[in-house]
Length: 604
Image (cartoon, rainbow, N blue to C red; front, side, top):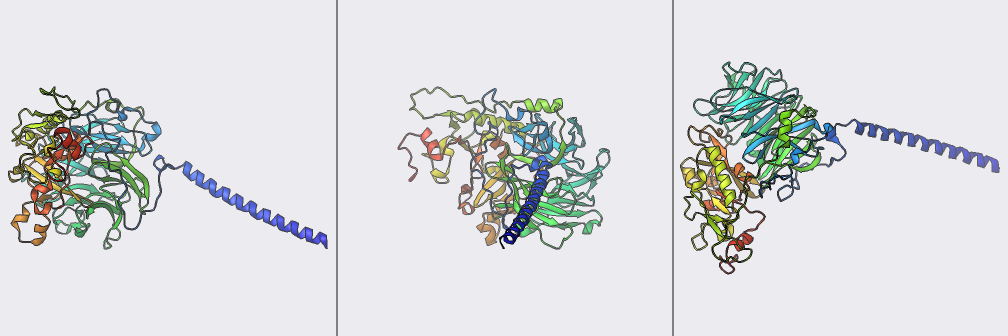
């Protein structure tokens, strides 16, 4: 009886071992498949990426509250001569595949930069004394349309990415920009100023720039930021024709009376930056509501269904494979780069962008290595300091750690003084604004305001008494020299200021979008307009303008958020105040200039 028992146990052990062996082989096979899949992944899908589920209702990304370390050194404090430039480090050849190209503010101008999510640096591609904005990639990923103003006037240019050769595409003496090519690379749709001063969309052949372009839109409201669908019969664009900026689609197969359809929802707030998926099935855009900017996706095959929310973002572009979206998340202090899977997964943590974004593209096939001479010279360039601090020897003894105010030459301010620690930065910005706008705007700015004089807002909320701030004259709004755009970030409201370019001066661009009209509060009986401190104006004034806020930020001058009660009191909006903090709080800045006991933060 013992032997049969032993034989039966042996058979059971053999069967168990066989099952375990089969399971092991299956496991190794699965592991092998997984390893092989990882081995053939494109570089942007490397294992350093974070795959995390995003809730159905997107939450605000956890971003740093301070300026990113990758930002140009000249933003907060002027860099020292000879400081290392991160864009000068040559990237590995493998990192130059599947690139993104960004138009970024760097000092007084906007330049083109190449970036790869797994690469070590941002590579500067241009280093010209003018701006490069609104990049758009060709269908094959080998050439780049962009807008530029070498002679002051804006035109469309085409960059051959392999050779770095630039070709001018348009030559009219009016603003032309933001081109998007058709799939067959024969036509392009773009923005152009009409003879009556409106901003409309036009279509023309790329290789026949002398032909008269066909006007696509004729609405008095601005139509801009167009993008051609991969199928070639639809063009998406942004327009304020329904009030707030919204996404519209033009069907080229329909007559003009039935051609245009709005696809974004008015109740979700201002919308912009439409982008088609590579197969043309989906249209994505950004829309802001309650201070949160979200990416929306609309299925063209199901046009009656409402669009869905993907996640937080301001600018959006599709990856060439169509299963991921590259997104710029904007914060008051900086811009960040993230990526989402089409199903909502966050594919990478937020990456600080070294400058404010004025457009970007995804899906660049490759850049040659070694870089062509034009790229190489730009990449190796070390930006010169925007300003160099210099202190004045005081005529009387000053306590340690204290600063003095110094006169500002040519200022027409009531008290033409600034802290000795920031006057050079102000002079540099003043010169840059004069060069961009054609007039000495900051000569009339309000500078230092003595604490002995009446304050429009509580002392502890105004930086003018620190000597580190200036305010643009409010009368410029009534004179038509200044307009503002409202930007909400969560519960805080900020403002973007545009200044009119001098008449007959070759610079600036037409205004896009809906500006904010503070004075609408006094002209209406609508209680909602009164309670919200004004209203959006979908018809901005004509003429050419510069983004003063963007330029001031490049020189270290930050805008301030509005105080909570600003809808009832215009000075509390602080839309016209800019400050150079250099890491200081308001209390520290006051102590830097004023003797102890002269002011009391809790009882000014």
